[in-house]
Image (spheres, rainbow, N blue to C red):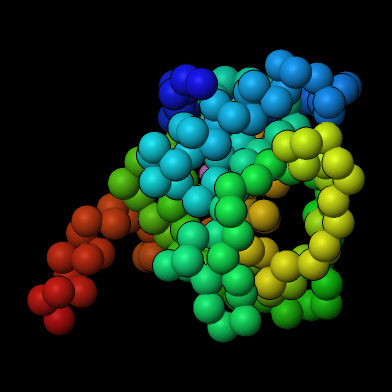
Length: 175
Ligand code: NI
């Protein structure tokens, strides 16, 4: 296993539409996923998409840490979704405070679907389908966007919420 270099905003790979994975069972895909999970955890991220490690493939890894679970949302161990599909359930939206390993230190509030249906293939090459809400739905939508070349600021509609996490917490501590 190896830690992978993370692409930062400005690199064109982050703006490309990623290619579907031809063989979800390929040993090199499993090895790539193992490295992506290690890299995500090392960087304290909740998710990491293949374009973020300079691979334009439709794969992302994610987890729901116990600290982000709650409100009926359960913690989920690190896992992968290959060639994912995501679709909204209903019209309800939620405001999500997001960060991204490709925009280090920054955060912003992004409107997202409150519930989604998802499908794809997992790290064992098995078909998976499910429904998600709360933080789980948030991370799925953020990571899926990476596969279409979309970064979270492109989804924002209130740029007063965009800035450095350090400054937001400094202001919060003094107000
Ligand atoms: Ni991201």
